[in-house]
Each structure stands twice: as structure tokens, then as C-alpha cells.
Image 1 (cartoon, rainbow, N blue to C red):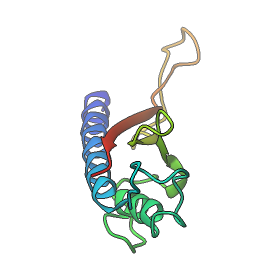
Image 2 (tube, rainbow, N blue to C red):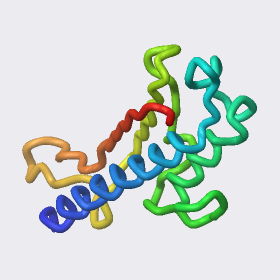
Image 3 (cartoon, rainbow, N blue to C red):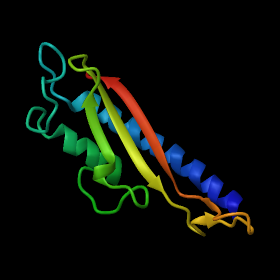
Length: 130
């Protein structure tokens, strides 16, 4: 079972990075830039809803939806910021709490509490607004 869980974890991390990359491409093309690049404060009000659209695209695969692309991922796991400030480079960060299907811990076989198999998957993608 541990091999199946490890393979599933690698597959889900690969899927997560593709989701973040696709959302980054969407954001870089939809953010409304000013003469100086990205708006001074990157909010939905300043970019015609581009932040919430991007988060929904990343989590649900579309601007509207209720079925997530990864089990357990939510809008609150996604953050979008301009880093460094006034650089025109937007960074999407996702912190996804991966949980195994079969069991939460690998037995310690009497030598302790066991090994926790759930862990955090983190993916970042940086792009410049077009």
C-alpha cells in the first residue's frame, strides 16, 4: 500500500503544479496592467475580478464550479501576490494538505508512534503580466 500512496502523492503533486501553471498563464493574460505594469494594489477591484477568477480556475478548472480538481483543495489554499512589490511579477502559491487514502500512519512496529503519511504539498509559479 505504501507504494500506491507514494505514487498517488507524486501524481497529485504533478497535477497540482500543472494547475498552478495554467492559472498563472491565465492571470498573466487577464490582469489589467497600467503604464507601470501591475496595478499598485493587486485586488479584484483593480483588475476586474482577475484574482477570484484565477483562484476559481485553479481550484475548480473553470470560473464557476463546485467539484474541485484535487480532493481537499480549496480557495483558501491559494494566494496571489506581486513579489517583489512594484516589479510586475505575480506569484501564485498553493499549499495543499495531502492526505493518504488507505491509512494516516505507517506502523512503528512497536518502536514508536509510527510515521505520519500526510504532508503539505506546496507549489509556486511566478510570471510577468503581459
